Image 1 (cartoon, rainbow, N blue to C red):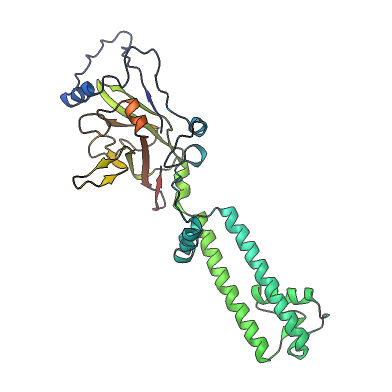
Image 2 (tube, rainbow, N blue to C red):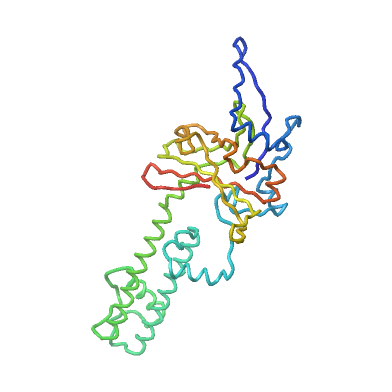
Length: 327
């Protein structure tokens, strides 16, 4: 998330008495003395406009999560990708299937059903050729007839011109294909329905501004980001969190070096869970930069050197009672 400076300005409505400028609390003034070079007030325009997704791509700026059209998707990669891929599908098949795109799910289902139909058609055709007395059919003995018989066995409860007789082998093949068809239909319908109705689709109508702003409000230094909900329905219990990731690292008392630091930025007023309102209108969520803030004492150069990144998450419950998250 890029951070840019906001210019201070004050105005009074015509015919009204201008309100006195509130005093900066001691906590904010103490922090302001630590960062005199963060945003010099004499600059006519924001000195550091931050990075848009395209600018980060051109400047090869590393980020933890995607932004823009793929906002919220993790960019963290691991070694031995194929082993982890197989492990996730074997040990956690359902969640792995839910995280797959709907187009790929439909493509895999079509290919899977086609492969099963063709495989059992080949089995029925070979069995029909070896034991023609075990199948009653008025059709010619062709692979096409065997394919139609295979599809009818998987998808219907009745037969047409071709039907199995009471041979043990035909009963075993019929039972195997029927049970496999039941399992495939249960799994594929469950995955597709869960994928379509997954509450993460609701998160796509929550917008979190790509750039953030650091400026003064009522004399207090603030970190601000805007959040909006495009749907007219209400989000239940909305909550906004923000985390500062820095890669400068730290060393513990035991001498252990921790390469990354994750610090939470308290958003919104105390007790508001970050959101002051019902998201009927776009809201600006604030974080006060005082001596308790992880941003206190930092400059733009120090944040750039530490490869700092602020990740904002939005959590809530949809009108259907399903929790979801956007970031």
